[in-house]
Amino acid sequence: MSDSARRAESAAEPAAEDGPQEGPQEDLPFEDLPFVDEHSVLVKASAADMWRALARAYGGGSMPSVTGVYGQLVAAEPRRSAGEPLAAGSTLPGSAVAESVPERLVRFAGRHRYSRYALVFALAERPGGDGPRRARGEHHRVLSP
Image 1 (tube, rainbow, N blue to C red):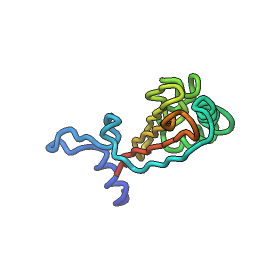
Image 2: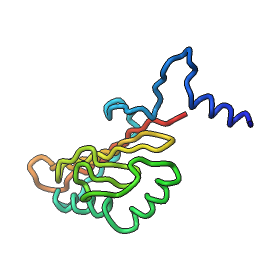
Image 3: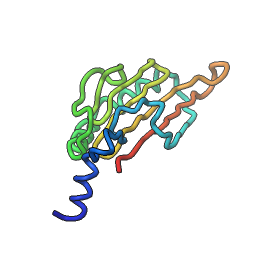
Image 4: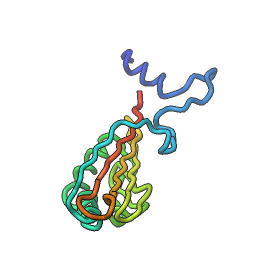
């Protein structure tokens, strides 16, 4: 057995004297996932139009087939697409809608053999309701060793 295979095998099983160990693949609450980055943009569209565009981007076209192939390669959870785009509980390979407030916020959460992650998209009206709306995306992730 190679050194790297031995290290991987020993890392996969905690030593008996150490007791159970938690790793990045455990069910960490969203709030405990480390913040990675955030991007925002002002958009000249209504919240309803932005929500529909987000639903199209995450619910149709070729994306599910691409994410399905990649998801199989990295053992992503959830494994299949199900439900209406952006509806709480719906899934794509590698992510599930953990929280959804139509035209305001959607939080995706997922995992694969290398990490646990969450993506949050928030849409906000500008003060006074006129002009562009702010679309903000946050990325939280913890990587497996």
